[in-house]
Image (cartoon, rainbow, N blue to C red; front, side, top):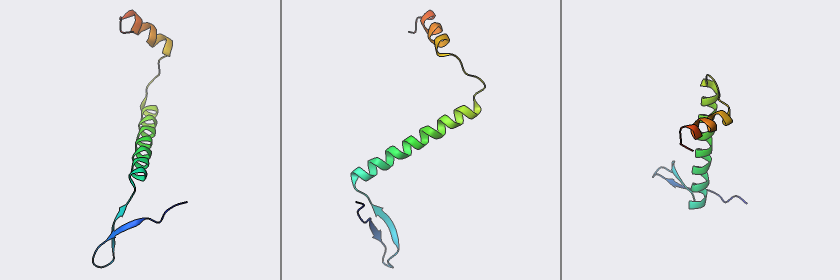
Length: 67
């Protein structure tokens, strides 16, 4: 069930802000972060000039003593 949202209004009755529960606010922040991650991934895929095989990268890191 969705609760009615509460608003802060000015002297003329114009809605100026919305009041969210802390849980709703955290969910909103998570959603925004997920959206940003998806947009970053999309940008990386569009601008990538090539991809390397995981096994090749892992072997290189082992050779360099980084893994």
